[in-house]
Structures are given as structure tokens and as C-alpha cells.
Length: 340
Image 1 (cartoon, rainbow, N blue to C red):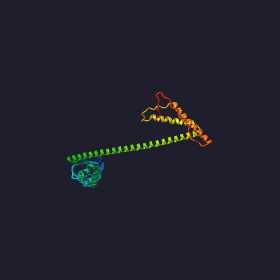
Image 2: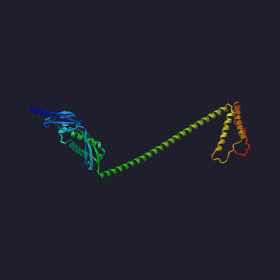
Image 3: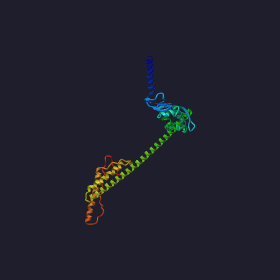
Image 4: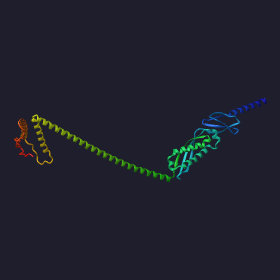
């Protein structure tokens, strides 16, 4: 019995030892982390997320590194620019571990080393720029910082993904001076815009006057052309009427001559009545006087035509001597009138 009891205790101890050994050889790695395995103090391998197996008593877990993208705050620091202006600058940096072995054994304190690297390069890059460039070229500063720091951190097995400058704070007196400068610049632009507007308005008015003068000249030209065309057509009509009257007289038609003389007579009376400088009211001649005048003219034309035909038959033509005078005008209700 004592031997059996001793064997049972040994078996239990052995089982416990095996279970503890197995448990020591299995490691569970969470998502987003990588573990390094060291054998006798030397790097052996890297355990990825999930269950990992190591040799108990020979291997042990060394560093537990986060392989997700991480961010570190860059504290505010004073920087002297190229034009000797002092400003305070802070920012943030984003990085990710790509090589767990180098990130664990190539640098002692990864985050502290990266933070110092970012701060020193911020002073270097921004110290080589003027204040105006510093305030207006943040994208350029971020790109330059990212290029320099990523190349410097490459031996550490990390990738710097982004670097952003959060705030640039100039001194208060410099901010006031910048405010005055901005106000003066805006006032200058306002004056320039006002002058430009007045200049454009003057140009527009001048162009409008020019266009008005051109249109007026074109109107006068067109009116003169129309007047000349009207006078030409009137002259042509007058010539045509005279030609037709000559043909009618040659054919012995006295009605056309009577109509022509009567029309001229009436138009002459109308012109006298409508004259603006006329001081005496003109009363037209009575119809009897007009008829007598037309009759006398007709007799003159008939005598001229008869004698012309007789002269053609017997002897050369001679001028007319017996002309029938026009009938004197009859008295009107307004009293005697004197032709003018």
C-alpha cells in the first residue's frame, strides 16, 4: 500500500507537470498584435494573431508589439523661422509597425525615438522657411516632413503614414501687425476696384456716346439718301408729266393743258396762303375768275394750234397778237381783293 500510494502521488505530479508544460508551450496572440519569441535570449521567431506554439523552458515571449496604425501627439515647441520670427508649433504623427523584429531590437524605445525624430525635423524644416511661407504652405510642410521622417524611421521597421501640423501660433504683436497689414491690403484692393469700376463706367459711357453719334450720322445719311431719292422720283414724275402734256398738246388735246394749268394755279394759291411770313389773309379768287382764266388760256392754245397749222399750209408761222385777256374777278362778300 505505501508503494501504491507513492506511485499515485508521482503519477499525479507527472500529469500536472505535463499539463503545465503543454500550457507553457501554447500562446494566444490577440488580433492587431505580434509577439516575438526568444530562445535562450536570442530572437527566434514571431507569433501572429491566433494560437502559437513555443518550446517550454527553452523559448519565451519577448516583445508584444501593436501592429495597428498608431498616433502620437507632438507637443508644442518654439521654432525660429528664417526671417527670425518665433512661433509655437504642435502636430500629430501616424505610424504603423511593419517589421516586428526590427521594431523590437533595432531601437530601444520606439515611440520616444519617433517623437524626438519628428520634433527635430519639424524645427529643421520649418526653420528654413519664412513666416509667410510657414502660414500659407502647410501642405508643403507636411509632405517634406513625411518624406524625411519616413526615410529616417525605415531601419526601425515602421512606416510613417501621415504627419500633420495642428497649430502655428505667432506672437501677439506679430498677429496684430499681420492684422493691420491685412486691413491695409484690403483697403488698397477696395480703392483699386473702385478706380477700375469708374474707369470701366467712363469707357462704357464713351462707347455709348460713340455709338449714338454713329447711329445719328447713319440716320442723317439714310435720310439724305431718301430725300435725294424722293427728289429724283419727283423730278422723274414731273418730266413724265411734262412729256405726256407735250404729247397731248401735239395731238390737239386741250383738256390736259387745262388740268395742268389749273393744278399749278391752285398750288400757287395754297403756297401763298400757307406762307409763315404772310401778314394779309389771302382770299382765293372766285370760280368765275378761275373759269375765265382757264377759258382764256384755252383760247390762246387753240389760236396757237390753228395758226400753226395754217402757217404750215401757206406761210411761215408768226407770233400771236390777239390774246383774249382773262375775265376780271367778280366781287366777293368780303369786299374787293387785290391779287398778289
